[in-house]
Image (cartoon, rainbow, N blue to C red; front, side, top):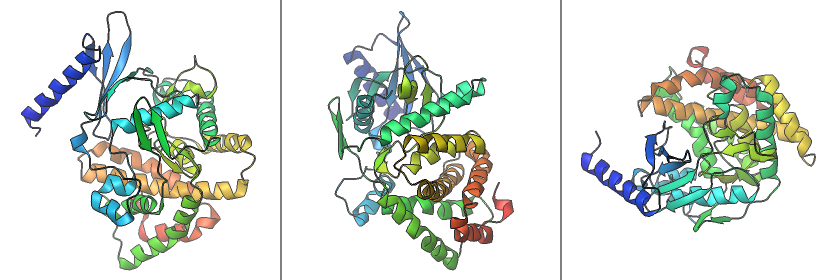
Length: 367
């Protein structure tokens, strides 16, 4: 149960922030949340203008990763630092948003922010999430084409080590060995708490041996801005804009420098909606056509390997959300992820990992 005094204090701080930043006259409407500790409201004025109010209480998260922290120091600081998450920090959101807009992409403008309090007022990009408009009958092809074009635009630029915008700075760290290992190990840590599987010491040792060279490839290929949560519920369709700017971007504060296959996996291995094999192939072809400097065979091998790691990571996260956090709806997304996982394992180069899954995760657990 929430402490009523803490809730009251937070509400007082939010009201004061809105008043001092010129938004005290707006009507506030709560919006649906996600799996994070953030919450959002839509602010509306009588003239029809609207804004988004972000609330991220800093005390609800462990510390983010200091740029110079060693792996042991990161582990001691907690999951956010070890995994190189932004801990919901508003200054991360502000700095990343500004950099994305400077690249000609559609991240929300920051209209007011107090990072120390974890509060910000943002441009309202509307409600036309990719997932929503496609479910309502829109042709998905131009939306996915635009999403690929936005990634091509992002991947054409080597991002700086530190992002700066609107009075905030934030380090853009690499998706490195430790973060990747933590990502892969979410699967073996949390799946046994939900499914009828058990991983003994030999299985865990084999798991680590099989993933080590893939992590090395991922870290060596970390060269582009990575949104890290690039999927149909974080993309807004803005057809009135031009080119890659037609893709409205949300939930990018955990950005890192990573292998270009990572965000492609997030888009094409979408846990919340089916992305057909044909659509995925069309997207990969569009991406590769736009980047002829890439070796096709090498890139597709990396896409399958890192896609597999990403899918295993999400399965682990969803198992944790169900068992630890009491959010059973995430179990309904897992069968789709198993389908994607099998598609990646069809790559002959991943035969050893396929054998591991076949040996240790029986069919009755893949549901």
